[in-house]
Amino acid sequence: MKIFLKTEDEIELMRKANQLVAKTLGEIFNHIAPGVTTLQLDKIAEEFIRDNGGIPTFKNFPNPYGNPFPGSICTSVNDVVVHGIPDDKTVLKDGDIISVDCGAMLDGFNGDSCYTFCVGEVAPEVKQLLKVTKEALFLGIENAVAGKHVGDIGNAVQEHCQSFGYGVVRELTGHGIGRKMHEDPSIPNYGSCGNGVLLKTGMCIAIEPMITMGDRSICMMPDRWTIKTRDGKPAAHFEHTIAVRRGESEILSSFEEIEQLEGNIH
Image (cartoon, rainbow, N blue to C red):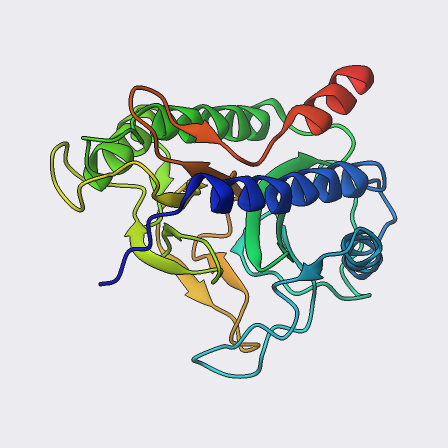
């Protein structure tokens, strides 16, 4: 395992990449509505990232199981947990949820963030899944401080989500991030306090709870990318990239723009 600690200058570059991702997610939010296809959202994201000097990291991302990823964002609707491929057949409808995972490279460093959006009017029990998953992300971040361990992050996420009866996906994890999108260490959404890699100042990690309304079992679709819940129940996915610090970690990505826009609607 090789963990790259970042300098303050490198963290500043990562902050810029992550702010581009945050702005891209805000731009996508403006276009999420019934009748819109996931391919339309993908084109908007790619254009926005490139217009702002970035490169969509997910585009042609290699796949150990098959073909590279064809899109610039992952668009995971309802029971799709992660890695949904944007296409012109997936048309958003009222009551759907869609997790948009976005990655961008800017000046040699990566940003990575995900937000699960509501399409129109969503059932209250599904809204609660989103609320709890987002809360779990921030509980994980609270534990991502120098001197704690990776297991402290996972434990905080797991305890919160399981207290609501939700499933915590085991096979998919967060990760270190920097010049590469996926670096060491892995950041599971489950674990025991005090276990796992020791967190040090300068580590940059992506924390990303992937939580299911029902059973945590998942399955891969024939496209070798799309991962769904086995029981067909919805899943939520929220992600921030952070820099580990003493006392309190620094969130490099941002939901502020999205939350302001959401506030204007609700």
